[in-house]
Image (tube, rainbow, N blue to C red):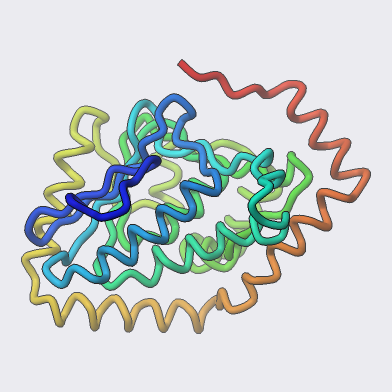
Length: 262
């Protein structure tokens, strides 16, 4: 939010009238999520919650990708224990899901791993036709965490969730739309305008109706597939990192799949 006392280094956060904007701003790393990004996203959610005029927040990523996911090397962060770092994603997911404002994800390019979980935390989702989605965690020898499994189950169903998580296959925007992960797919050049149009349309509704509807839908979603046990996802991640078979799978994957940056 413009004029915030604590500046953001990983995000661009702003609010003009009823529509706020939250943009991942680490394009040189394809907006990969690190501990600082997690903390700033939680803080941004709190700032929007403290701004009563903001009814809708557009969540986007700078550059050619929405989000490349979580950087596993961040687990070596000396400021906190590995478990504390592993649990940051859950805190982020809960902060974004629980925001008072309606969130609209605008997705372009790659949306990988934790980026998919972030998208699933948003209320409405628009993607460019060139967007692609993948959950490579199983190939990396780690479980999908941050409450990602129940969130995906309630958005795309159990069978599709197992398919995407276990095969780690990439899906394009059209298939993601058919599965129910996306609300709309638009030409890449139209993504910003389409997300803005949707945001302003929703923001034109009475604030009390927006808040009540979001709370009602989220409450029903929790009954369908609860995220209450997501705190245990961090323990599952750390256990998998110590498993020899999982470690071998991770080495094979990383030896053949390298993320390149511009």
